[in-house]
Image (cartoon, rainbow, N blue to C red; front, side, top):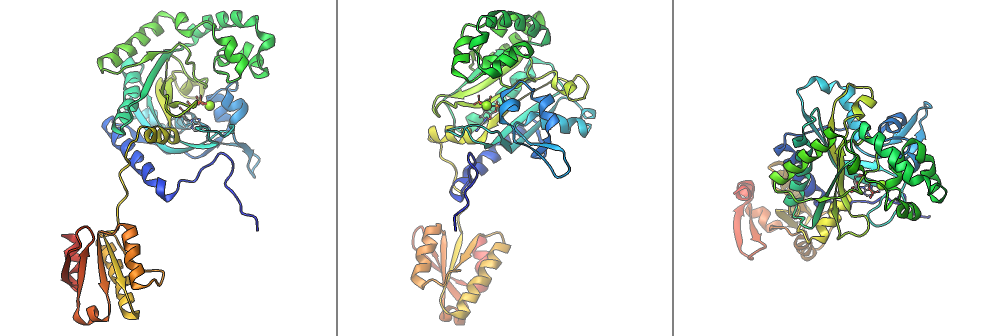
Length: 419
Ligand code: ATP
Ligand code: MG
């Protein structure tokens, strides 16, 4: 029979890899705790409407990349293509705005689905870590969110990342900017891709991050958002930069970043590696002061980012980071004969109850093969059990590191290993 394969653009995390994920997840939780952030878990599916309104109907995500289907009740449902819209929906639905502000909400390992052309660094299912800090307009808050990401990278041993920042202004700045951009683009209308032509009237800024070759050439000399900031937005951006300076964070001012989602206002940023190929953005985010209102809440500001876990692992590997190895087997019980085998099974079970990792032979291996296997497992100790040991009530515990053997009474094994 033909074997069924995983859908294109998805990836299994194998046992030999999962410890990397655990290490990163644990570090993320530690860093979030240092910043007073709490986890908020949201469903993988949401009503499609949430993303049409939240992410924006002229974005690549909504126009090309969403996994949308009708469920058996005739509702249009979409697999999460990003993290923020669901977080804001949950924030509003659960009335978290009644809690003291700001609120720092994070998610990690969140499955994220985009119908993209699978290639290095681009999957159809990837996983994101992200944070949303809700309730504050202060430039310190933008800087704090960025610094949380940088702290995480530092702790994870990643060094070669560069922070790029920009400001795309508020709706007021955007009006002037859009007018200037339309004027610039009007001469190229016929040369742009179809999607961008449809964006021209509704949302010309989206054309800036189109991935089509010709569109990219056209926008090279387009007006830049930073030149159209109102006084408040300019001051705010200066404030964010001053905070980053105060914290000793290095950054590059990058007027080309406009971000591919409609909800951003003001600060936008990306953290980029040049070691993992063309898809170098590991982390991306910004401020979104209009989204909560757009999704039916009050006017509450927020700032956040999303970080691709797979790209983060790729960067860590490229940096030669050593991932801590998972817990080893403490003791392996090798046994020969029916009764000794039963005893080995019972002892392993007893050890586990006491919090000591233990293993026995499941495969009816020879005595010799059992020791070989124990070696492969990296067992710290092996215990050989035969009829003689059972009769004596005593076993020899062999330390695999130095080969020394210690005689231990069978009913004292737990105490021995606990020490
Ligand atoms: P790109 O410009 O590479 O398409 P994006 O702007 O679409 O990125 P975001 O929506 O900002 O990406 O997502 C946040 C992060 O999630 C990215 O910086 C990246 O690390 C990761 N990411 C996004 N799309 C994918 C994907 N298809 N496969 C793997 N990781 C992804
Ligand atoms: Mg994308």
